[in-house]
Image (cartoon, rainbow, N blue to C red; front, side):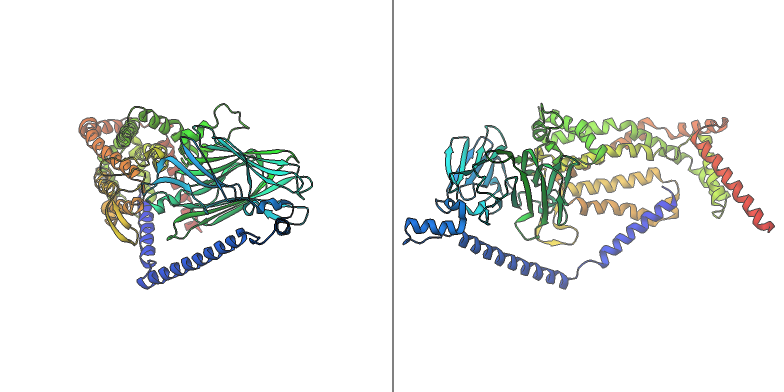
Length: 627
C-alpha cells in the first residue's frame, strides 16, 4: 500500500467518522421521531380499524330475518347481478394438509387464508405460520355484462366436492354457469395446485380474454433479528424474456411489467409464497413497501396480475409454493425439465452475483450438503469447511507472506534509496525502487494478487451463511441459533450503531481481527507507517467497525470469520517459523541482484517506461528553458 492509497484510506475513514458523529440524532430528535412513529402507528391502526369496519359492513348479510326468499333474491341480484348466489351460504373453512404443510381455505372468496409449516418454528418457538387470516388476500375482478365489477373476495363459494387432498369451490351464476377454484395438495410437497375453471361464462363476463387478479400480503416477522431478516425480505419475479429480477429490499419500490411472467415470489429471509403460472401471466404491476420499525410486519407486497384465458369452458393452471427457501429443494423442481419449462426458483436464494454465485453453487453448497449428510452438528460443519477453505488457499497465503517477507528484507535498501534521492524527485526515486525490485526478482504486487484471488471464496461465503436455512434453529456452544445473532449482553433500548445487544461470536471475531491486524502490520511494515503514524491507529479502527457492522448478522457467519482469522494467525506463525528463513531469503535476493536483469519481464518493462517518461520530461524541461 503506497502513501497515496494510505492517505485516501485515512481521509475516507475520517470523513465517515465525522459524518456519523455530526449527523447522529440528538435526544430531542430521537424523542420527536418516536412521537412521529407513534402517531403514524395510531393513524395506521385507525385506518385498519376503519377498513375492517368497511369489510364487515360489506360482508354483513344483505337481507333481514323478515325477508322472504323472493326478497332475498331481489336484494342479492341488485348487489351481485349475475353472481347473486354469492350472497348465500356460510363462511366455512376447509383444511388441506400433508406431512409438511397445513393450508386453510375459506369459502368466502375461495382463497388461502392461513398456511402453517409443520417442520419449522418461529423465533417464539411456536409452529411457524407463514401467514394467517387478513395477512393474505387473493382476489379476481369479475367484469360482468351488467356493468358491475365484482371481487371474488366479496362472494361466497359453494363446496362442490372435497377429498382428503383436494377441494373444489364453485361460484354459480344465474344461467347455470360457474367459476370453479380447484385446490389440490399432493403428499410430501410444498406445492399447492390451483386451477381456475370457467364454465359457461360467455354471457356473464364482459371480458373473456383475461382475468385480473390482485394478490396482497403483509409479511410477518419470523426471525429474532428483525433488521437482519428485513434485509433479505424481497419480492422476486421471473419474466420469460429477461429472467429473474426483484424489487428493492431496503426501500419502497414498484414496477410495471408488460412482458410475460412465469412466477411472482413474496419472499422472506427463509420462507416464500410463490404464485406460479403453468403457462404465463401476460403482465403485472408489482409493489413492495417496507413496514414501519415498530410494526409486526416486515414488508407489504402487492401484485396486480393479468392472467390470459383461452375462452369459455377453459382451465387456467397455476400453483402456489408455500415453503422454505432451501436451495436444494427449490432446485429439485427443475429436475427433468427442459430449458423453457424450468422455473429457476433456486434463484430466489441470494448467493451473490456472477462468480460468487458460481463458487457457492459449485463448491460451497456441495461441500456443505456432503458434510451435512453424516455430521449433525452444524458448528462442526462450519469448522471443517473453514479448515478446507484455508487449506485450499494456503498456497496463495504462502505466496502472499513470501512476497511481504521479500519486501521486508529489502527495506534497508529502500531506506537507502529514499535517503539518497530527495522526495522532490519522486520519479527518480520510483525508478530506482523499481530497478531494485527488478534486480532482486521481487514483485511488489506479489502480496496483493494472492489476496485478490482469495476474495471470490471469502465473499461467496459471506453470502452463503446468512441464507443457509439449514443453520436456522441449530445451536452450537452458547449460540442457540446459528442463523441469527448470539447476544451475550442485551438491553431494552436501541443504541446508536450497536443496537440492543452485543453478539459474542462477533465480539470474538473483532478481537481476533484486531490481533491479526497488529501481527500483519508488524510483518508487512516497510517504513511507510513510520512516516504516517496516524495510519497505525486507522488500521486498528477497521476491526472495531466490524463489531458494529456484523453485530446483527448471523452468528454462523461471525463464527466462520472468527475461526478463519484464528487459522490465518496460526498459519502466519507456522510459515514464519518453518517455511520462510529471512536470512536465506536475503542471500538469495542478493544473488539475484548480481545476475544480469532479464529483459521482457513486466518489471523491466515498467522500468523502461519510467525511463522513457523521465527522458521525455527532461526534454520538455530543456525546451521550456530554451524558450
